[in-house]
Image 1 (cartoon, rainbow, N blue to C red):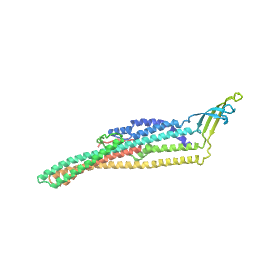
Image 2: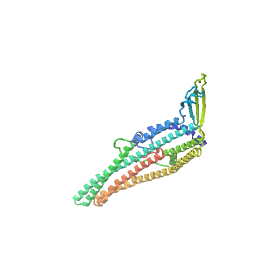
Image 3: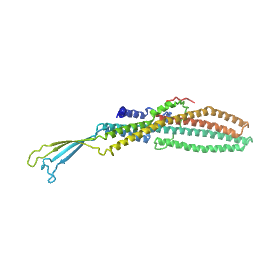
Image 4: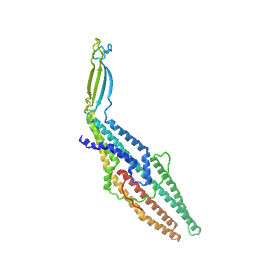
Length: 437
């Protein structure tokens, strides 16, 4: 019972926690870091997603049961005919015959009502924690899909620029071929590359539509609505300290909160199972009215009071088994909590490592490879004009430049996606400054 009393303050604070969380659900604080357009999508999703609405309704339903769980059963009212003679069924034949009215009240053993109310409070609190976890999950899904859409939009832009470049190079190759300075295979190679780009464009447009459908699905929209891709994103200047983030995850992870409340609930269940060894009491008070007897004597009315208790004679198959079951449920809840506690730091470490590596890749592409590729493309074009390099070399240089630019964008969008995944684990946004490209 000592362990339970330690949590009494927490249980008393749950109604306040409900109010605070409900206020936060209205958008007072962002769930994850997001640019304005994504933040608007997340806000819409939190308001319109029917799964979240269902969970919120479930929370309200469970909260309504809290006072019900801690209240007594309804008072029972009854009427009876007592000691009726079976030969005549007359009320005045026997002195003990009565017309009786009674009230009865069942009272659980001391402490049971309080424990039941605590249990229901914890059940509602656990459901609230699940709702918050699902809200974060929706925000993460929208963010990951939104940034994937941004990469596809960038791919289409690069595809468009490559197509325009191929058109120009085809005209150059045709002109050189017409004047006898170029080869027909240069024209044919450029046309093949152009056809490949057209095929790539079809695939990318299909992928873009699929991602927009996914976002519309998460927002529970009845019909398709085009989703604008992200605008130009700056490189997030993330300086992540693994130890600090691991500690933050152990205090803020929503699913860890769900499992912690599960432990508290299991402890209350154990205390309730122990209370079942003690009998509930059924109080009854009856008033019996008697008629005059056959001699005309006025018989006084009678009052009856009684207390009925249950006797646990089947203790080994009922109370003992129930308590053993609750104790094993507690062990299961604790193991589940410990398992997540051990795995969370590894999840944080994995994501932080991935973000660090993606940042290195992004800097390599944007600060070194793109500059080198741009110099190569310019020099190869100048050399091709004076017949110092082949068409294939010049073409590959220009394609490589744009592909490196797309590669840098892919790393950038991946950083934002991994940040959203990390923030879901941590239970809130990273307060990190951003630096411009």
